[in-house]
Image (cartoon, rainbow, N blue to C red):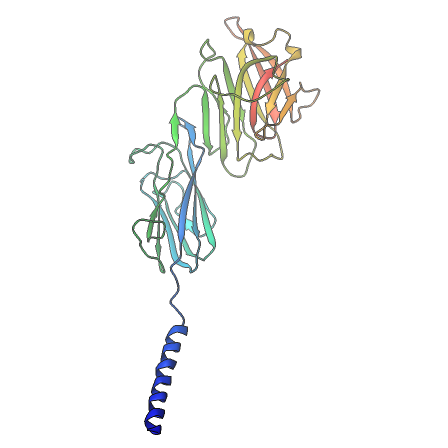
Length: 316
């Protein structure tokens, strides 16, 4: 009886030991959780201007993605491409195709791409439809962001407008942009932006007209003309100034041009009053220039030298 009991006890211990070993054995690596976001640069562009997009693919872990790729459903070739990791096919060489290699847990890769014209081979002229694909430790779970192929589920197409009151988009060559059309009773003001020199393309847009408003007290009690909204870059302060010119008919400006000032409402809501430059040009001052047209009519140009974005309007 004792031997039998000892044998049963030894067998039970062996079973128990096997059970413990199974529980403590290392589990297989969990699949990575990954996501993609697309940011339009900017949300609206003027017809004929470039459309930019910033695509960010993130791996929340816990494991790595062994190989990561990015393509787009449009066959149109990008005019500009940069990536923070890996490489992409050269701009102008065909459809977007990027190979990033491995994307480790808790890491992300960002691609900036721009197209010079609306797409003719997609359902929306402002939506290139980006698609990321992976190999390695991934899985498919019914269309969520953890699958082997991920199409941005919340992409907002870029709006392409022909409005005469809007100009610009993703600036590929940093050339001057200006709202369009001649001055008239329905187009009271033109806005022109000469962007600062930069080493890479940036967003440059200008908008004026009745649709642009700003909160401005006291200094705007004697405002004239229309508001102009300027968007250059991502709101940063540049190391050098760039110029913005508001053009209007003389009848819309004060007769005493020497009294003209400019209200500059910054993106943070602060209002600056820009006085006319004295001597050499410098940032945050203005130059007022009357121009006589061939037909004898007179227009007034107010050129501001700025170092950051905002909304502008003439005041006295």
